[in-house]
Image 1 (cartoon, rainbow over the protein chains, first blue to last red):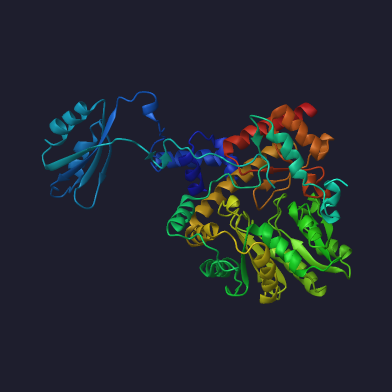
Image 2 (tube, one colour):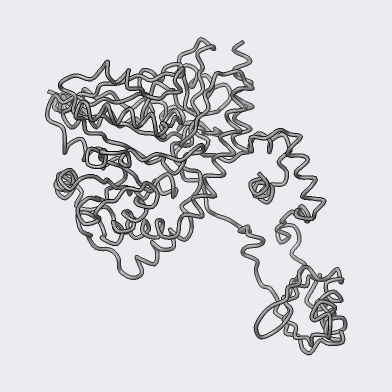
Length: 160
Length: 388
């Protein structure tokens, strides 16, 4: 049941244990216990809501920054990565293969704020060799969800 | 003499589809939650749609062979071999059609002589009996019942078989009941077909939507391959209803005869849909598995919901329908459906639209989001409670 349960929750975490129990053909207690276990073991890391902020206030900017760093003895990339991801401005951080090492997503209220963060906080960290900042112009899809999905249900109300 | 008088008596004799009548009422209303839809709520997976667009860009706009693109027939043969363990020669034993509906019509016209009888277990898909009649045959309904979970048995068939019986037309997993037949039940029917030397038309469009146990393909039963016209398509498993594409498989004589009719009436299935169908068979498996697993969750939701409401309901194990009994409300299927629609704005289909033995039942499709289904169940519950 674990995989099915996770798939359902990933799509809609507002489903109650009672609803999930029916959908999975299990008892409510079983489902509740399994969710607790998955939460404790950090299989379920967090319940997240995807918001189209542009509809409420358009005054945030997002930048994706390619960062080259020098890996350090014993800890490799991890120590520098931690110094970066601890900043609340950093929304996501990935170690990449290829032309650069870290992909950092930073959010700020305006272009200046992000630029200042890169110049004063990020680029100055020891071991950071270079940064290339790309500002995001439009978000089409996030975490597997199409932001402004215009596909509609075109089915007739009754069909054989 | 009016125009209506000049219509062929054979066509006039066919009663209008029960679904059609109800559709006209529903179409006028706003804010309706519909459980009346016999097609997936998923839109065709993007990779399939995208391959069609790419095909158009490359200029795939011409007629194809009457049989369909060989590349598609080869894929159909491969998937049928893998899923059903039956081998068909893509060059002369597979015909690509405009949906299973066309394939069914072709099968009937290819095998029936005037007055030939065809056994048709009911409740069943709305076009089965009409197709037999239009081909000059005589449909012989075989009523099935909830006590036996709407499965047809050899006893029932034996009572209705006559020297004029030419064929048996079965569709499992079943629309509208969601019933399936197990391998041993199908084997008994196979023995019956052999004993009376019947042709079997097996519509297995819902085969991939089987939730308990594996689906048994009728042609895979010993001795049944050449006796069977196996029908399948892309509408349900790949959410491709509007593309209108299906296929028929059988011995070269039957497929040859069906192709003869097809080439003069249809020429070929649309090439756009054929190109997309190739992509569906090559890369559609994982999307399909996801859909099936989601249907399964909703199926349980509906079963539990109806049992809580207090309507008798057997567990459907295939397709995406559930078929609760509304007998205890004292209403006919049509009255129940109409009153529910007016009172609570939930649309479902009266069971007798699928044959006499569907009277006292309603067909609810769970090809709708879980949120919609929960809301619909709540409304139905309220409605039934008020009836007392």
